[in-house]
Structures are given as C-alpha cells and as structure tokens.
Length: 271
Ligand code: HPA
Image (cartoon, rainbow, N blue to C red; front, top):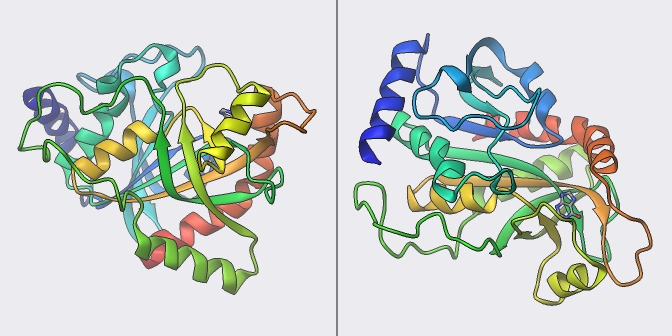
C-alpha cells in the first residue's frame, strides 16, 4: 500500500506544472462548477494515473485538476469514488492518501444530502460540524501503517473549527443562510425509508448522504484539516410526502451551486 501511494504521488509530481498545492477539494454533487473558478488549469484524467481506481460510471470521466483559486494553488477531484459503485473503502480513500503524500494539508469536501433537521429547507447549505459513520466498513480496517497515521485516531474534531468559524463570518458578511449539522454517512445506493430518515434524526443526524465520511476518516488519520459542506437537496422524515430522486437531487444541488461556490472560493482565499 505504501509503495502504491508513493508511486502514484511520484507520477503526479512529474506531471504537475507549477507549485505544489497545500489545499485539495473534492467536488461532490453541487460543486462541479467550482472548476470554473480555478485558473491555469491542468487536467489529469484518472485513467492516466497509475493505481487510481477505474471509473465505473459511464460518461463520468474523472479528473484531477491542478490550478489556482483565490490566489492559492489547489488540487481538485472532479468526480469521486463512491462505495455504492462497488469500490472498497481502500479504493474510495486512495486519492486522499495520495493527496497527503503530495503535501496537501487541508481538504475541502462537498456533497448533496437529504435533510432530516426540521428547520432545513431544500436548497439550504449546511456546514458539516460532525458525522456519524454508518458505512459497513471503516477505511482504516486492517493493518495500520504508522507512517500514514495512528492505529486508533481520534475523530472528536474531525471538522476543523477554525475553518467553520471562517465560513460563519463569511456567511454573516454576505447575509447567507448557512446551517450547521451532523452528516450521517450511509452506503447507499437506496435513499432512506421514512422510518430511516426518522431514525437518523433521532440518533443525532441533520442530513444523510452516501459519501464523504470515508474520505474524512482517512484525512483525519493523516492529520489533515477538513472542511465539509452539504447541499440539502431533499427532505426526509415521517411527515414528508415527497419522494427523493436522483433528478431532484441534481436539480436542487445545481440551484444551490452559486452559494456554495462563493463560500468555498472565499474560504480558500482566507485559509
Ligand atoms: N439520502 C441519501 N443520500 C442523499 C440524499 C438522501 O436523501 N439526498 C442526496 N443524497
């Protein structure tokens, strides 16, 4: 495992023109257009990167993008690997290992999520303050490499409080409605039953989605700072009659995109 990480990082180092970034962004549903705000872009297709998982989704060509945003060098993942696609947890989180090896210190993640918190509305943007891991496997299961991080890493401050404070002050300045909440990570690909949305709310969740938690666990294992954002694309619970669909999720995520983009750009500039 250590060798494959080093090999991939070595390949990327040979490809990257310009300074190495310290900031990485995983562009989830609802943040794809953030790419438009990256200048001097260099695209490296996942298919060309040694040891990178092979993308299974048709027409979903993934790329690593290197460039500049808000005056900072950044590395962005256009397309992530989801557990529900059939990747194992080591594959899902491999890019985060490579980021660390390349010198990334701060990871920004975004996703679309269903809202259980009764204050939430479709289109709301939620800063992830904490998560509940309901994936059937932890990405750190198996042999621990001390070079990568400790056997039993703490997850009590999985999301950086400084970055959350910066986001809050930006939201206050711009008059944005910015929610805070706990993200429940599930394997998918089913959306929840009404009872499951209710259950996730009762156990302390505000939003639920099918990604992010594996990457955040590995980033914390590797001592990276993490900032996460969810776009609330649908609502779930006992009394919610609407049925979530992929189309609705995408539509709502696209609508919220300008807010998320503005926020991300600003935080990157200030971090
Ligand atoms: N559940 C799980 N994942 C999701 C949802 C949801 O309601 N919305 C967007 N991603």
